[in-house]
Length: 460
Ligand code: UD1
Ligand code: CA
Image (cartoon, rainbow, N blue to C red; front, side):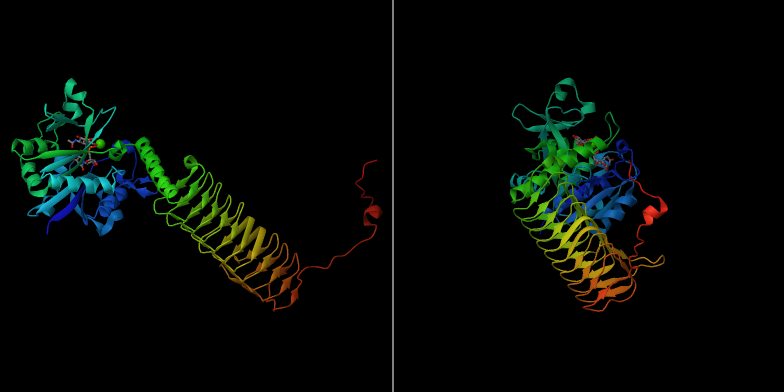
């Protein structure tokens, strides 16, 4: 069986990022740059990846773990030198290697598989992924003969004026037949303006040996955008974000304003859901059908059912059932499970709690560490007093209970099914089912107190 691997170069210093974090670990649309490359490789069906690491190698290894093999390049002596460091993994292997960059996240799995297919069909020794750029400054140029055959790649710094006018550039990504690559690497020298071993020089070596070198041009040149600084990081994020949004829109999601909508890769959204402006949907979020999400909402790692509204609210690592209404201005913190047909209204905070079906929590309420049953009504301003200064305690509220406005439930405490609690009560002891609890002072009236004291406030 033929062996196919991806060799991802990621040893460079990334000086222009001005960061303590490795360049390839900076995030594009919620995911590290190198992760995007790795995923495209996997999606193209390539199982084996070799990552060439150098600068901040420990950080990169810590992140990628054992999903890839590692080659270490101590000194960055050029792209050709970087590839040489992976020789032990390739030696003796019969097959192909895709050389990619760890800082080029927009490369698609489609381009990777197209390149591999094209390479094999044409019996090439090397296939270069190229792009046509209106401003090719800085890139290596593809130099061809009169017939259009590739002769070599010349680096911008080494190119003359005529060569610099060529708009077709080297993406830096290639497919090589392993044995030819290994042979050509032996012929590299660092006799050039940068004193580096250029991987690009292998092409001329192969051509001079009479082997076929081909090119495949990407239709969308953004695929070759490399990240060298934070401006390019933002550019790549923007392109990636658009790709994600486009895919969702094509699958039946309405996004009112793509320019102000941020959705991480992998977020799932059902058909006919409408996303209003200012919405951020992060990693791990799953949203059902017919929902209205936003405006101005942030949902992270949450599962939202069908027909749910989340308006101007934050939902973190929680589950929300069908037909439930959240917001405006609600805050659901991690570990909460809310049932169906629930109302979580304005200025309501829910933390680490379960809320049963049909329950209404309409305004100004804090529910922390509680199990609230079905069809419960929490009045305005109810506070679950879950912290006693030392530890957090749980509260249980049974089905159909009615908790009046401005009630404090001092945990741990239990409210039985169908119980009522009078407004303004501070509950410290269990309330049995079907009972009414009143825990507040009786009202006293002092008649004519104002007049007797001469305290009238009315102006003549
Ligand atoms: C390289 C190509 C150029 C191409 C351009 C596309 C060569 C000689 N030139 O130029 O033709 O147009 O990419 O972006 O190959 N790296 C290492 N070790 C090294 C050097 C580089 O791992 O010793 C890695 C870097 O981390 C980076 C990638 O290789 O991910 C590209 O290196 P870079 O120095 O940016 O190459 P360019 O000079 O831009
Ligand atoms: Ca570069």
